[in-house]
Each structure stands twice: as structure tokens, then as C-alpha cells.
Image 1 (tube, helix red, strand yellow):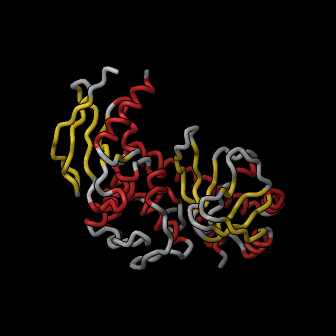
Image 2 (image 1 turned 90 degrees about the vertical axis):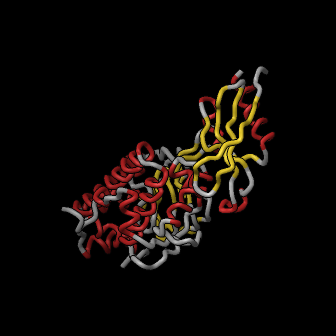
Image 3 (image 1 turned 120 degrees about the vertical axis):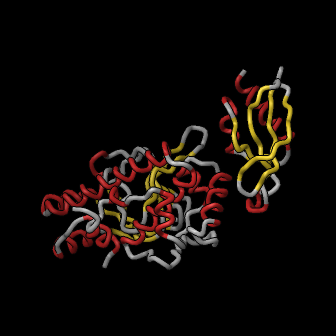
Length: 239
Length: 82
């Protein structure tokens, strides 16, 4: 199953006809190298971008170059469905690893959502989950300790990758987010991220290989993070 | 330039490294530095602000090769402020 369909079906049922129509509208794939922009802050793209492979992030740069990562984007995610409605992108979307993407032209979104209201509902649901993720990250940054915060980010990454079949309990994931990216996402210094990950490793919660996402004790990590996946609004976790 | 930066050795209760310095400017505590241990790879042996106050709040975004480098950074923050 196409990764976009896997992701959307985790949020809401869509029919075979809707699936075919949606996939038929995709353009690409396009390759984006690590560090390059998928969408430039302030631009007005004529398409929204679908992640096919790799990890991207939404980010904001301050004038002096400090960067805050607002969210990570995984395969199946639509990085900017809101650009269809808002037109102008109000933050950058960048490739954290080498990425493969597809474009969903805004004209196609108009045609698809007019013909298939259920698809419109699904995309709306997807964009509201983006908001829920942003709210959860705000709680993370504002109130969670460094260890809780990083544990929470790792839990979220694992669940979101699981949805599209890219992570499984007991198996290390090949996706790699650098400590610099984690620092910019968590608002912690690079040194603080490194120290905190060391503590999570010493507790036996995550693996020691810095190039892998390896969760050794899911329940333990969840407990440290206070992680509750309800905000991801996946089918099966609640209506 | 009234700033007189002094250090006082201190043990800091953070994982991995305990070798620390209280940093004073004109006798007032402004930061707590720790020397990073081998778990920090390329940064091992450098000084890191475990805590820093007021205008030095962003000191933790940097690491320092030695204590004079930390003094220079504090002085540059002071110059920027005045």
C-alpha cells in the first residue's frame, strides 16, 4: 500500500475509488538532499508536498540564525496541506535526511475534495492532527524536563513511523535524526541533548548506537515521557 | 570594563562529569561551568555552562576550549550590553 494511503487510513477510512483518485493526482517523485528546503519560508507553492521517504522538519529561523524545529515529518505525511488554504508558507520545511517527495497540486486538491467529501474530511482530520502535535510539542517545551521531552519525542517518532510500517517493537529503525536536529526541536543545547540521551541509554530505555532509533524498553520510555498517543488521533486508539 | 571574572572550583552533581567552576563577575555568581567528559566525543575536555544567569542565559549554546575563552565570551556579552 502507498505510504500516503497507509498514513491517511490510520486516521480515517477512505474508499478504493478515493485512494485511486488521490494517488493518480500525485506528481514526482522528487529527491531532496539533506539540508535543502522542501518548501521555502514565505513562498507560495502551487502544490502541497507528500513525504515518500526520509525525514523532514518544519522550522523557523530567527534573524541571527537560531533555528526552532516545529515538527518532524515522516513518510506518508503531507508537510503543508495548509498551503492549499493559506497560500503563503509561514515557515520553512527542510530535509533532515535525504528525502523523496511527491507533489499534490492544489488544483488537484480542489477537484478531489469537490468530488469526494470524505477525502476532504480525511485531509481536514490530518491537518488537525498536525495542530494537535504542535500543541503537544508546546507542552513539551514549556513544562517537560529535558529527559521527559526527549523521551516524548522518541515515543512520538516511533508511533508515527509504526503507522506506516517503518518501525516495529524490538527492531531498530534506520531513521536517524542528528543530535543537532534534536537540540533545535527540543530547545535544549547540543550538550544537554547528548547528556540526556546518555541518561536514557544508561537506564536501558534506548540503544547505544547513535545511528539508530532503538527502543529497548517501550513501557519504561513511555513512563518517563508521560507519553499518551491520544493526540495522534489514530483509529483504534479512540473514535 | 568593571567586570572582574573569577572562578571557584566546585563539584557539580551532573551525570558523567563533576569538575566544575562557579563563575563570578565582580563577586556575583553568574554561571556554573562543567568540564565535559569523554562521553561528549569531539567536545570532551571543553567547558560548558550547566547554568548561567541573566544576560549570560545563552552561554549554554556554546562550549569553551578553556577558561580564558569563557572569560572572553562573558566580556563580549558585557560589551554588547553597553
